[in-house]
Image (cartoon, rainbow, N blue to C red; front, side, top):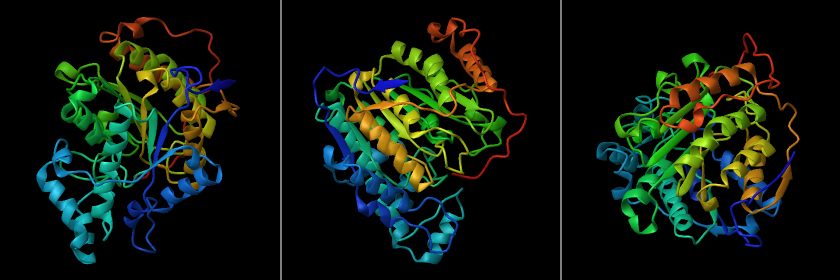
Length: 396
């Protein structure tokens, strides 16, 4: 199967793709000798790959700017912001003591600056894409953000970078004309923090596809299930596609796109897409134990380019195998630059469980999105669902 990026752009138009990488975000680092997968090597591996492939030189290079507190306070309480601002000035004992109060968090002397730079970076690239200065952009940021809640960090995440940028576009820059935002979270873990922040807001359509394993996969919360669809005026604007088990790959994710995300996105008609781009569902990443190939990610991204005039902001979330994350980000960057690719997936049959989950999601949402009321295709070739898969079930 062959696919080409740039379907929403005018023929012959050269895309201007922003690429933000800043070594200062590598100062946030775990103590030497600890078994901590969220390390600076994640960013550096991506950058080396993009440079070696000649991708970085084709993009518009950008440098990070720290987010102003008045923008962060739109999604996080002041007490929490003060904690992150001041934690790096504490001694290591106090940093470790503070980190133990939270779930899967560490602090060091570089954490404060890195957190403010990560949040500011996503604001910066989102603003330029929304203003039309860039056609799309990639923010290579860390620490990641989608688990961070309004009053606490969790799951390696300090500030919720994508949520901060979404609030900035909607509430601080009305002149940019961004009234509807689609947030797509393809990290293997549920974007619990982002979901909570927009759960009652119909201006934001939040879509998360993730391992759920009936509540036994991180973050171990029931609100990652398909039944959580939003509240009040936001009902129907929160979509969870929760996989039952490991080993889901290209075919499963493409099915979720074709039969849930894309029909709803067409009806929603977003002004911009913010992509919480975690790559821990990539083939070779033991934390997610899933099987998306680099060109599988490229195809998922290509399918999104048909919306919002191709205005997409990719913000890095998880992904803990340096080779997998580097190859996957590189494939996505080439899509945004307009390169063609061929999808040669080792397995293009979705699991039977995938089909069942998609049907449950559609049934839950069809009242709010009538386009989901139609029947799924019949006589689709499906893989047998494993009765049990021994997969990793660690914090991200």
